Image (cartoon, rainbow over all chains, first blue to last red; front, side, top):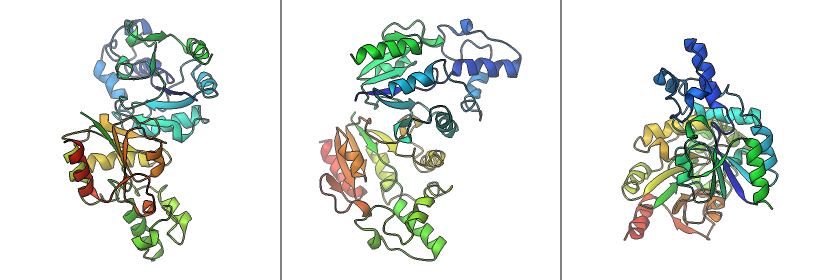
Length: 176
Length: 176
């Protein structure tokens, strides 16, 4: 059975929407997804430091919602692939337990054996990787696919999949 | 620069001694290292379940001491190799932050980029792995070395290194 490393933030977990929601609650300013297009993750917000600080704030990761279709799709993939959830959690240590609890709540069928929290992802050796960060795909030796997020829309050096329907279609062809 | 995945429990962190210390404190019974030889980790204790429960108890991992020579040796290796700390922390989620804080205290020179907390280690692709659990070395595609712990003394299918002096000598030859 082939293996897939699936990222959390902006792939399974809707961190973009969480930024926007928390920014609105803190500053009363609504930033649109269009404002974030093609910019590094925090750059589209008037106060970038405040957004970075959200990442250090208890509850930020734990209360984020899932990307539409992600939870069902991960479980569908897990029927045909060995699925690993691989998240770069180590930069924000309070996120470790929050991300673990998030997975327990939203994807309870994923075993603890298949969860990996890391710093960089350069030593992850699965057959496939789904990630929104090109830096993770650039050092990956398997087949990588770029999951569309606002910050990566101008990147064209990896196979791009725009949503979880496209992911399922793409992987269905890989299993033929 | 070649890479090494270094395990924490029983390789950098003296979990055996922590079991013995906590068992003595809880039951007033002193179990010797000799009693643990050649048995699965918790089997050498009269009350195995109590020992397993230590792993779920706040403070167990955080207050463990380092294996003699480990901290200096890891820093020595980091001068010639890309060192990753790879710990199977996911089975005991409260250990995630404790292990992170332990590393911050005892090995502050190791970047968060080089820390990986996982379930199984089968998708870790470094050039070398130092581990006390044969199950991790059996699925490893690089060069694995078995770090001696009481529970593994009867295993003979991997290169065995008995302490951190032997580790440094062995890796010194690898860099020649």
